[in-house]
Length: 312
Image (cartoon, rainbow, N blue to C red; front, side):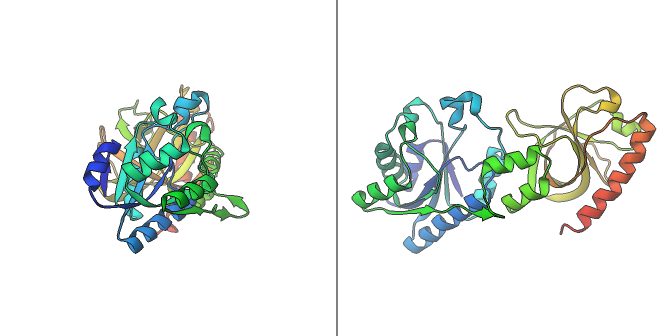
């Protein structure tokens, strides 16, 4: 997959080639997003075009209404990996600045999609709004497409158990600790990723050494508690459990993310881990002593092993 961080670079790369394109935030790459990506990859193969996605370095709300900017589900690197895995040929990530926000819907289609991405077909999510003031929608896209001789398609919502699949719903499920339902909407395990930093080694002192994960600012942190997880390290999958919370037994402050990997005791400081989340085992709780905590962690480990044995 080719990646560019400016529209002009992408245009120069394309030359005389054309694309089947879509655009949006694509945070989470959930089942609804996947339907849209599948549509443009099909269109691209039929028309001998490149399947192209235009997305943004930061959420548009960070400019338009910062207080409402949602926490991010997927890092830019993981988002790119997921899009490539779905068959995208070209990913263009641009800054959503004031000049971009002030483009009218017609200007956006003509200047960005047709001239910039050389789009011959454009597909759009059912609830996508674009152009100044969010005045552009699927109906307008189809009308302008007819005028310009473009193929257009509005992809309907993906429904899961009677409700629309959306990034907003995935976020709420994660904040509620309902990881299995969130995973169902994503079509895969949710991943929390970050860099391992040195902690206070409390876990090691009770027989449960942990890797302390520093996640990027603005990343959504799921509900506090203990989870059954798998960590991906250098392509290897390592079973474990993860605690999110304040470590009340040790009078902790702030929220920490700590991963205990089973049958693994190497140093991981400075390494990047991707942690797949499968099951919320229990809420975080305060114990009377470190010994009581260690006994509970033994039970958590067995529960996590049972869960992960069923996850192939």
